[in-house]
Length: 112
Image 1: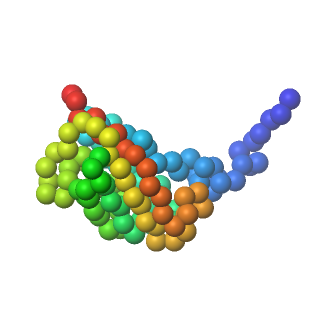
Image 2: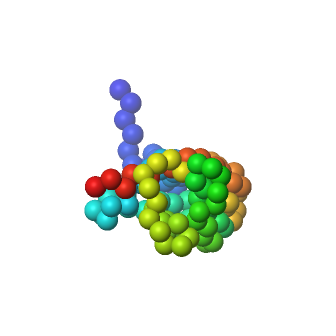
């Protein structure tokens, strides 16, 4: 039988492997998943810029030195509607998992 003590595990490696980009947020101010929290990536590689695009490719949100500020509002402060959006992240230093940049989709659910 295989056993593994905490001494056998490299803490930094575990933290790196747990640093994932969420696929959705629900900015309904219930304290759960209200923002696009990328603090793990910000701590690991730094986020130079986060851009959010609507389904037509229009840039609706942009933030430099990003951590977890996006809460389902565009740059003008207007609430976004429920639906799929897209993101582009540019890192300050090469990320061990995502490289110098990454893109993906983000589902925003604003239903109460």
